[in-house]
Image (cartoon, rainbow, N blue to C red; front, top):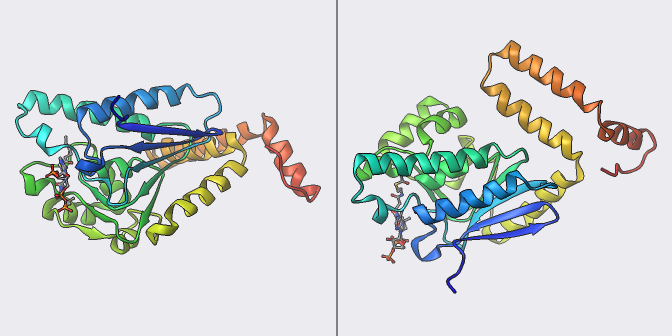
Length: 257
Ligand code: HXC
């Protein structure tokens, strides 16, 4: 039997998805996208989901982009269908109700960078390489990069990267706010474990609401977004988490969520 193109490990609600096409540097073809979407549909119904980590197999590459070999002979209609499949899948990842962490271990280019941009966190190895090199292939980013990149790093840097196609190293990615943390590759998995344990120690509904407030608020004007925050804040007092969290503080013990 051939190996799964996406590997899933569920550690008590903290799910790691590994894109497993290392020979092609984990390039995203239709098969990988379909498998990823199937996993995401499953995760949407996961009763105890606490967080998702997404990464690429091997130490050389997170994802080196959409699959160029598959795209080469596409007609405009086929290209539109391919981009739509990817956009839908990446949107599913972005809108999971829990934090999503991109563990970036090497090349993070084109569609790979666009995948990372849809994650709440990006943690990168110090040898990671980022870029939107599509213009060098005669196309533009089609997995959301022209829209999520400026929202993450600002329009000037987004236009710089999307029109030159230049690659940047992990330190520059950190400086422009494309990633949250950079560290030696050997420390990357340990750090992500620490991060996910930290997330798991917090009130699960509070973590979901914090993500929802930030994401939904960004699509609204400031006053509406502030009203959304107030509603979500008030809702925290309707469940048991707030009583437990605040009682634990007062009683000088660790909260048990
Ligand atoms: C298909 C790819 C690939 C890709 C690498 N490979 N990237 N196959 N699509 N995006 C394959 C190579 O063909 C090669 O296969 C194997 O992976 C190893 O890659 P090498 O090039 O030999 O490795 P190296 O010399 O280390 O160079 C690494 C690299 C280079 C710098 C990352 O592979 C590269 O430039 N890749 C393309 C990056 C890119 O342009 N990405 C954007 C794609 S467009 P063989 O069989 O020869 O061993 C995109 C658009 C999204 O993402 C929107 C679409 C709607």
